[in-house]
Length: 108
Image (cartoon, rainbow, N blue to C red; front, side, top):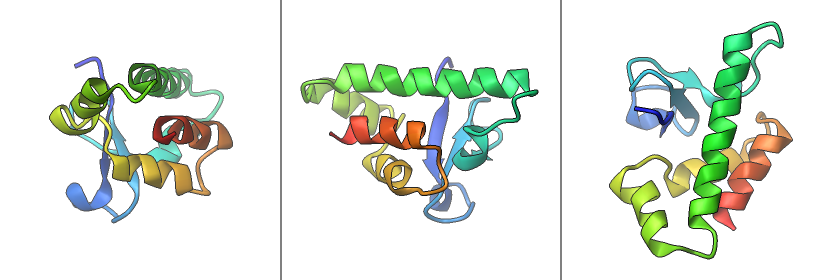
């Protein structure tokens, strides 16, 4: 609770090598590309997108300086974000540049 879950498509019977987001405890999944580009008239979608951006900022801050314990917690123990998902986000030309930059900050 309180965290949006991301997962690669092949792990949830969706399109492989695409990232999906769930904001309802893995009951439903939305492709990341759609999730981060809501209509400007969709207030709820805009707020969810901002929440995910803030969540990524938190992960970046926690992992800053190669903090091994936080990296292990986020990527392995809790599986909030895997390296494979970060790579997919970084390399996806369909994502807005601002989100690709977030994934780049995580990897660096």
